Image 1 (cartoon, helix red, strand yellow):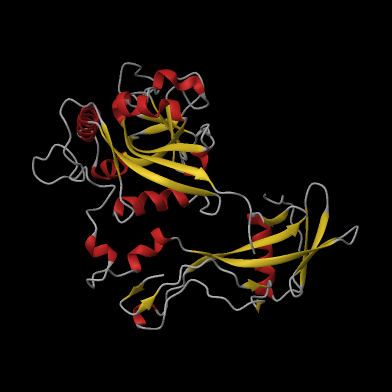
Image 2 (tube, helix red, strand yellow):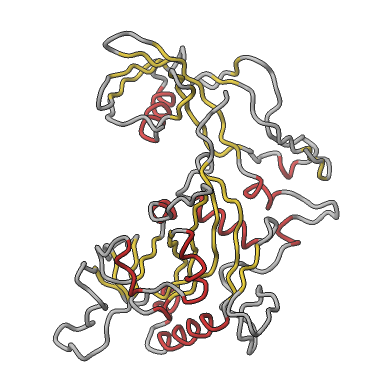
Amino acid sequence: MRVLCPLSSSPEIHGHVVDTLMLEREYDLSGRRRGRNRRTAGYSQGSSVYAGLQCHEVWKYYCRDNFGWREYSEPVVRLIEEATERGLKEVRFITLQNQYILNIHEGFQQNAVFGFRRQIKKRPHFMSSIRLSPYLQTLGGLSALEVVGPQPLSPTATSGPRMFPETWVPMNPEQDFIQVPVSREDRSYRTVYNLFHKTVSETKFRILKILRLQNPFLWEKYKRKKEYMSRRMSDVERLLNERHLFHGTSQDVVEGICKHNFDPRVCGKHATMFGQGSYFARRAAYSHSFARRSPRGLHYMFLAKVLTGKFTVGNPGMRRPPPLCPRQPAGDLFDSCVDNCVDPQIFVIFNDDQSYPYFIIQYEEVAGTVAI
């Protein structure tokens, strides 16, 4: 088997003792434990409620070089796990410079030409406290899901004549906007956290805070635009109209976006491949490439509400979406442009009332040192 790939760079709760110490057990590639017997994160056997819960999500694989432990890239990880499942003792892979032999049984990587060997270990990547929180109980006996607020990403469906989301807090009418910190115990935090880390590794980046933006003027504009677009849509189209998408940016423009919204007129700052508008992505990993690191080492990303409506593939020359019917240039236009229509990952809008900067994610890169 061969593959071409690069190397990538405690409280007690109702009888369930959650051990949050750093993992210090060592494993070979076959899963056998080595070395010192130290505690790992997990639950006690106080109740069958948590008996089937595993505190780790995936295994991480590392190779030791002259600079420390380096994590294997995803293609090599897949190669190791497939070989382990098939009971193979070793597999080979090549990089741009070298060919290697991975000895699954003995746990080492060997240069196929020069014979140099390097030690390999694997460690479980544990669920973060944010991901674990729905399974924990408070001292009062309630689960975390029972003590937190309403659903985070659907406050547009407010009850009665309420004008603003029910998650908003009172604010001074003279203020254009406020940024409200979201508690780690809030469902909103977990939802944004999970969406962000769906494509951005928890081992490489750490969320420092999540802020909810309250801007009444921008919200009213967005709400009116959503109602207007909904009038000419079918029931299915209404369900698909609003999306929650990411937008990476630099620290110096965060306040401007909070006050004035995303501005399609300054789209040329980064890219205009699919049109000269405001860009949003389904994957936080893509938006991270535009979240320039601040002098303090911080990155900023918005999770925005975006009305994508009817979309078509864009091109660099577009200043607005093309007509729905090319033979009727004065007719209705598409609502947005995308990178492809089959499975769009990038959306471009040309009107600022089609978006609302919902959450601000402040995060930083985790130090690359891995202690095993």
